Picture 1 (cartoon, rainbow, N blue to C red):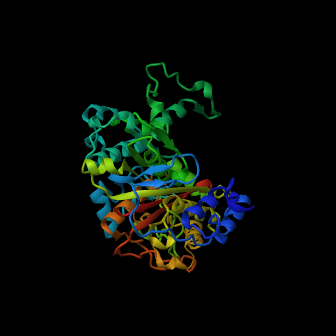
Picture 2 (tube, rainbow, N blue to C red; picture 1 turned 90 degrees about the horizontal axis):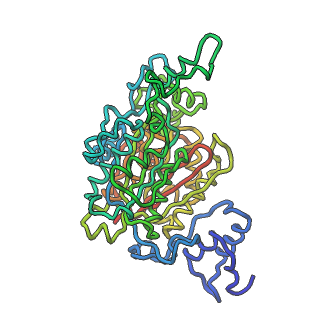
Picture 3 (cartoon, helix red, strand yellow; picture 1 turned 60 degrees about the vertical axis):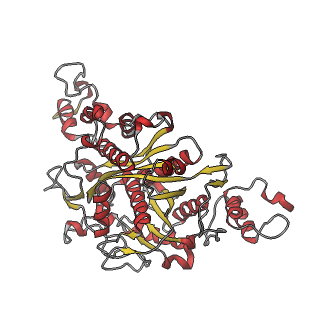
Length: 506
């Protein structure tokens, strides 16, 4: 390798080094770049060290960022993308203001399960959204469609309606071909009350007989024509798109606990590279179902502590944690091209700068304890954002309250931030609302945007017995104020999915 040919065929690591720090010499190849090229040829980044400082990282973000997204053929200039609307449906509050006040106050939305009789169930605590009706937040002509929606879809369209109203976006005055939707979600549990009569007809003392299932064409069949549509994962994005006449890019992301984060990240790139002007992006999920909770119990991931009050069960990074608390909800962010949002006088909560994704390839149930996959996702997001880790002041952490995940996330942050890891603030709002799986990343992205907008950082409640393996600053129990320019939101999911978003205060 000689001269400027040292860059020929180089992958992500080389691009990262060039973007981070131009070096001296004939073609600016530094020792750092050569090391990253070596790691790239080996097929991975190995043990990450803290990334280098971006020139001018503390200054303003350029309106058009040359090659800001790195390799991948997304064009030579990326448009600025801002969060111009926030809609949240969460156990601790519905709507941007109620949700955010609940987070800042450290208010827990976790309590005894009310959606079914859990008196004899091993799991009796969850983060539920009670008595939610999305109809008031939808266009009047679309409200009758609510009756054919599943629970997650109702949360999703409600959050979208709240976000559109918060943004002041008028879909009737927006080119529908330039308005799109990306939603994250997950496995949609079937309503056992609807499923039971079907199975009962096909079961007797000898077992299950498929030939006895009712003919759906018969008038007495419990299956109605649109029954299946309640349980298709893409129906969340479909209902949002139909409600607000979004005819542009459309996608559904099903990547477990990373789905909401990835939906926001993919939608950001669609706007940044010019495929859309406005995207409604987020996640919606609901798995508080007797059978689903038994499955999670068998997996060993849920908290079962009977000696703690319901609101004390979710305790990320605490020594007494024993699993996460299942929850439900949705969040939708309006992602909009900056100049367009500015011209129409939209509220601007934060700017999205980068998104990173990786996979552990370690275990379908356990994260890599060394945090290598999580670190790669964080580093990739910082790379795309052209933000130095030393300029990040806050991380809205995944923080599930499981032994393995919280320790892994701590390790991942240390891999990227090095000696500066203990200088950055982190907190987990799952301590207040539980883990909503496919919706969690979107709700946390909304919280990050609101943190950067208000310069207030929500606490990790129930953190009273710090775990020595989790020794960073997790903002225990009380919210903080302070000037932060750049923030991260992280997500790590079942199967080994990892994702991270970078946002900036505007």
